[in-house]
Length: 283
Image 1 (cartoon, rainbow, N blue to C red):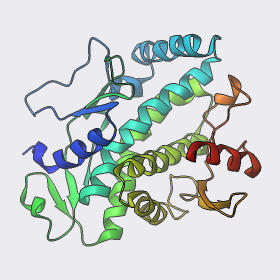
Image 2 (cartoon, one colour):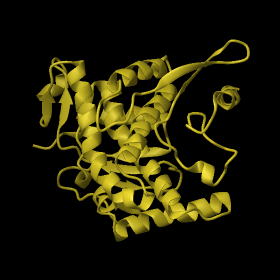
Image 3 (cartoon, helix red, strand yellow):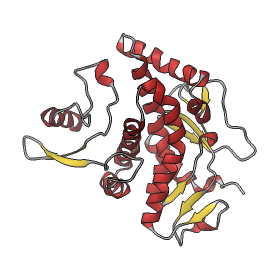
């Protein structure tokens, strides 16, 4: 029997309330996933053909509009993958973080639309096949539930669920990005970590600190196919203040358009510049 929406609704409601630029719906088993009028199925992106061409045309136009110049095709593809994967990973990491439930989403079960007015992060329509949970969770009695013994087993479910969804998507984007293997999984690692770390800050009540601890346990290193660890560390500001940061495993390629405007976690940004950027953000 299909997973009832109630298993995940509370997590997605809290996520989209904190992040109103994103919308998530859960189609029922008898509803077709949207695939027209701006919607793209994840499966069409994984195929790497005309569906991906249409998807990336939006990024190409957006880059020209926002930066006043065209980008290399591999940069366009990198932007497109980031925008999809950042949101798609939250389908899995948000329920894990908020409810200790980990849904599985094959690429045939997710659609994405980023053309809706007022939703800069887009809309996701997602229907899980199963979900993992811990003993004692009331949701363990629901259809599609799989009970795992402990927190480490649940973390293994997160890693497996993200890999199951992203592996075919990375295969579709990879040739366009001129990246393979480790470089693609480095980008996937960053999307998992930075997406949850960011939204946990929006949740408030110390949730960003908890997210950091949870992500360090989720990705301690040597968890293939992911690259490296969660890679958090602390910098010190000019007045002795602590400035949390992390070292990205990949580069988003923004430097090809704005060399002076790299991210605070970019491997191209030295610590002195990171401190400046972090202080500016905090102020």
